[in-house]
Image (cartoon, rainbow, N blue to C red):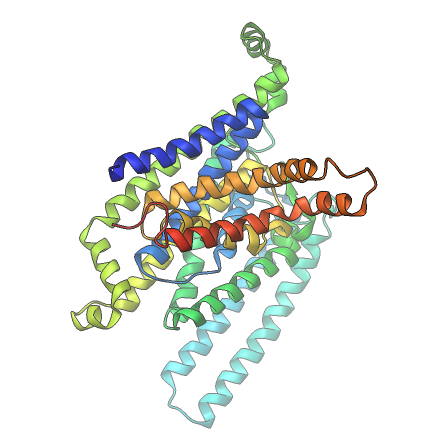
Length: 446
């Protein structure tokens, strides 16, 4: 069997599993798996750029995804005028003072000669700047969070058209938040990379994980920014609302003529709109990733990955190239994070767990094939399908195994309750099997 036929067959099998879900369960479930598979594939491409191309062990994926979700709020939500008038300018001034304090400390460190005078000057600048920052920042935050905290209590976003749900311009802000999420994640990655990319791979993993947790902690606790754990709901989206379609006579007539219930038809239509948008983004990023892989730049990155010492001896700036690809991969994860938030219609910082946004993405890349973009996409669809379907399949299997036991049996109850934990067991088994029989992944790097 040729390589192209084998790879096509693998994609066909995964597609068949999603279609089978539509026939066996519901097409809403199948489209949900497809849409989340498309977003997961985008994140897998970002991680594959960092690990597969450059060998950077980034386990802070969750932080960059969260920054993308934050961008969806900052761009797509309407501003809160009372909050801006109460403390908006004060917050901006406080943040500028904080940045100026850090900049001043860096300038002192670089300009003054080593010694006690430099140390004391840096301490004075940092301590004085900190108290000045808090004196301006804290009252402004208190004023913002006091504005109707049950519904707002934050600054809001930039979408001045969000209140007009029928306006096309309001929906375009949701699409605009996707590239902005990428830019926000890229900016954070640049700051992180300037300080952490000189670390060895295991220390880099620890550093990125810690920084990701810091980002999540900020989003959870700074209510003025994104309402913290109170969540932001009703984020505008680039697709029509189901209730709007259900109240449109033309759509109802068309659904009825097709023999579909208008409610089900509206949910399917909205999911198909998202499928089209996500597919366009995935294909564009996949095309660019393939072009990069086969370019001189891509060959240089793989040479650096395989032997940094030899590449540096040939005149390559290893640290700079690592920073480039770290920023690119993180930007792609930020785009995916904004897409998830737009799809959900809400920002829920409590859901940003390493299990979902870091461990699963790494399993997708490893199972699909590290260093191969198509392998990362295949792994994303396969692992996400299993992540969703293993629990109901496990419940059915446990019910079948215990069908001979009497009702009320302690063993039967325990096994059925344990079906909810089949996900983690299945992910571990799949990872072990693939590493044993195909250690380079289902579609290995050429």
